[in-house]
Image (cartoon, rainbow, N blue to C red; front, side, top):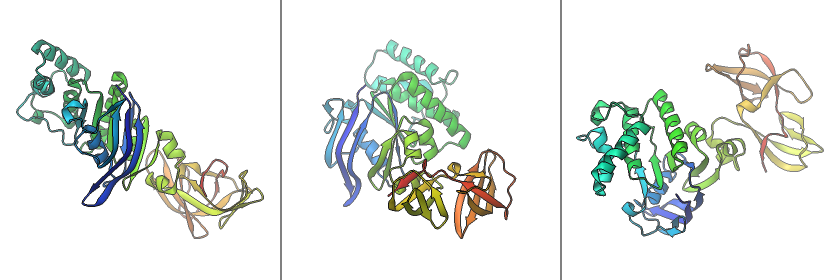
Length: 339
């Protein structure tokens, strides 16, 4: 295994920049997710690592080896596309063995390797089946087994679970994460699903409009976004704008205590789960329940405060109804802020 370095990478299609000055180090033995909306450049970046796309500028290294002009079959990086592309006329074991046969590996070694992967990917009993006889999750595992058969340095997954139903998707996310940790393989995955990225990754690279906006751990990117642009990508949030003077944050919502230094213009960000309900206090925000959505494990409220809406989620069931007066607590010293 080796670290992957992308240095000063640029790529355009039809004079439109798709990747803009990409610089990233992908650690060996980790699961790294390239996250972003459609058209953000994440699949182009993945295909460039695989050798399917030539970057116009910049360098790509596997360890100390420059890979710019190394062909796909020499890179030892295997891509599993969301369409899987299993051979319909081949059985499970034949699909898994395909890459080894192309490399003219000894038959006994192929048999041993295929049997090992069938056990590892939990495909026992399906060896003689054809792809059309398998479930979506089983086909996914066959595709991954076929990729792993040639023992790649890097496994690349492009939106691997997008065509699976919710429960199967969850199961496959857990399965692939456990497999990656067991094999200690470098795995790079593309997804547009924030929850999938946060639950699976060691590191998340958020791409927006061809640029990496933040590259860090799931906890860090969610709890400490470096910009409003990054924060906005991860769902509902509350922004409070104002200034800090004399140990207080002054805004249209009122005055609130803070230990931060004076600042003429500052924006605080709270996610719905960071604002709590409480009794009336000096720093309370008084509002009226405008909307209430029950979603099983939590209740999400929209609170109207002086014609300003604040979103609050509670994991403890609260008997608040539309029209109720409530008091909100927000700790501005623990909030993310942008200047």
